[in-house]
Image (cartoon, rainbow, N blue to C red):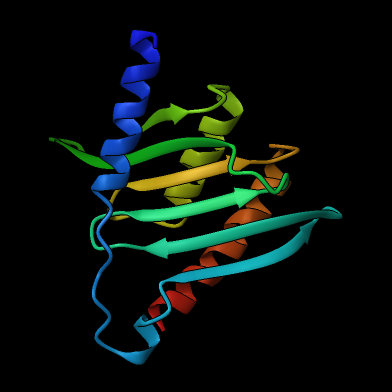
Length: 147
C-alpha cells in the first residue's frame, strides 16, 4: 500500500472516529438525520444533513453515490480593520477539482457553519443555479433541525 493511500485512510479514520453523536434531550432531537430527495433542473438529487456535537455532516448527490469528501473549517482573523471569516477547504478523498471545493465552500458559508463541515458532494453540474438550489434545500433541512 502506498504511503499516500495509507495517509488518506488514516485521515478518513480520524474524521470518522471524531464524529460524536449528541445525546437527544427532546423528541425533536431524536431524529439525527434529515434527508430529502428533490429534482434540481430535472436531475434527481439526494441531500442528507446530520448535526453532531462537534461537526456537521452533509451529503449532496445526483449520482446515488457519495462522491468527494471535503472538510471545511471556519476560522476568524482579527485585525485593526475588523474581523474576517476564513474558510479552509481540505479534500479528504475523491476528486480534487476546483468546482467541488468552490461549491462546498459556498455551501459552508451560506449555511453559516459554526463547527467543521464534512461534506460529500457529487453533482452533475456545479453551475451556480444548481449549487444555490442545493443551498436552499440544506437551509430548509437545517431549519427543521433547529425546530
